[in-house]
Figure 1 (cartoon, rainbow, N blue to C red):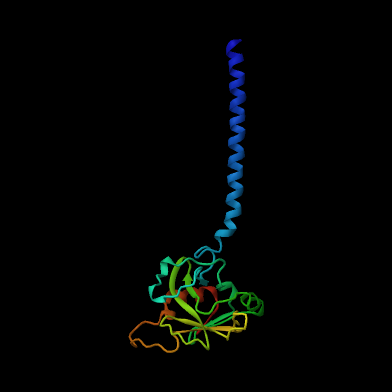
Figure 2: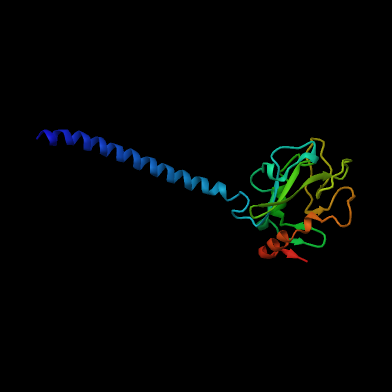
Length: 194
């Protein structure tokens, strides 16, 4: 009788403990399902080709290290957004629905963008305005002039230029835009136009 009396409170405490543990496990499973959606926007999870924007503006671009740049989420532009990518001039076309979304991004002139393929960062470049006097020897996406409020206008298609205003390096220097990983990703996505 004493063993039975001692055992009941212990089993009751054990039952409460098991109930708490199962609630914690169920809570963790729910959290993992909620965070799965967030992980999809990280490089390598869904997008084979994407253009991201650096979270912080960088004044001294000579000191930019590609792997240390924090990326803003979601990507600025990704393979599902693109209708065609013309490889010969690096022109990106997208539907009007994407154009309307891209126009909501403000203050991009002199911000850094990062081109990725899956989880690999291929290169970084800079958004420039046509009235911008500062040069950049990395790839550049030109934007229309700024509005009086400081925002910029996204063109109906984007062209990634080799540099701005002109490339001053050696002809032997590789063109960062012509990386074969990008080419293969665009072919795989079915959006490459030679």
